[in-house]
Image (cartoon, rainbow over all chains, first blue to last red):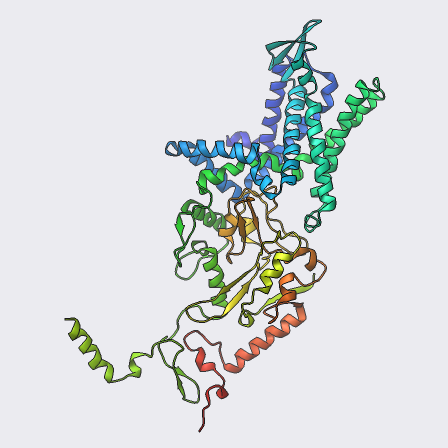
Length: 388
Length: 180
């Protein structure tokens, strides 16, 4: 592996090369040695390859971060552990359903936001599935006779359907349906970004608003193609396809380096129930100081490891780390240090001595034993005597 | 942004107006992001306000596996980006000062952002603008240096800083004078 890596500029370029190689082989295979290549989609094919390279580069940069690497490393270790099989399966299933498919947590942030995000995400995922399926030739339609189509998946003939049946119509209009979902969602999102003053506090044009406009451009030009050939008898159809192609290329190149990159990294959410918190809000590790439950052992050891790799020295004098304390205790430690209340120094039971020699009691503190001088010795003995 | 947040824990009177103000700030979603707590309830009723330090190299951002915590040009460490945050709470445990809060319902972390929409225009954050005892102040760098110098001078006059076990030795002469 290392000798192979040396023939590349970097690990990332090696991965990018193999991603492109595998994609090219899949295209070669599923189009029957390029025999069934759809030349109209050649531009999309090339930009999809560039998209794949960009995504690989971005993923590598993300995975190289010590924090991400640590969490991924633990996730794979847990996935291989047989004793954790049940927990792994359960957390993958629950995350896939609640977090990725239903996106419950966004609905809890607001119904409007939930609907908007669900429409955009599933519209985009659906569109990507259809377009990548068609551009890479993974899926195509062969005409058997003038009335019948056959769906060919990875060069394997599958189901046969009448050319004007209900199923065929749904499949032909798949992109129109997903694009409509995206269009509604994007319009809702743009309206929110313009109207809502709260989101304006931290939003940035190139990060939060540009992707919405790019998605809008792609869906509008794409849907107008349908309008052109259904209602306007192919008015400007050729130029419209070119315009649509340009918008799609911009989207594909923007995708790995902008806001939309949160889509491929979302499955990392599985790591939370799988590695750290099996049940939400149930902690198992007690705080070193107050004993309140605040986390679990695996997570704290991960956090310590990540901080150590990055040369954060958060170890205290007694050998404990700040991560061993619950957040409330950490706040208190900071204040105590700042106010010089760190720990008792000298005799805490010493009576208060101001400089004028006047003795004051210690506000609820006991007087030290030697304050009572001779009398305490006899008291001590009597107490002991009483016990015996 | 040339102004600085200056905290003096001793001045805190525990009125929690900073928390009420924080809840009112834009984008804070009616949840406070700062803390007012007792230093040591069994010893005294001294409270302290606690905000984010806005570290130059924040540990919370370093331990985030999703790379969700971003720093603005002005150096303000923002809450985790909602679309990236995976809700692992690493930031809560990585932060040396115990600042980030976590919302289990909405699955996101939120922390003090110094009321970014205000402080980026040099307007005092909500908490500093309401604090009645000046425990939280939003002041110029020069003013902060002056205050710091004054504190050091006080310590120099006393010779050294008072500690928990001997702080009563530093009580000024006139404090405990009784005469008949």
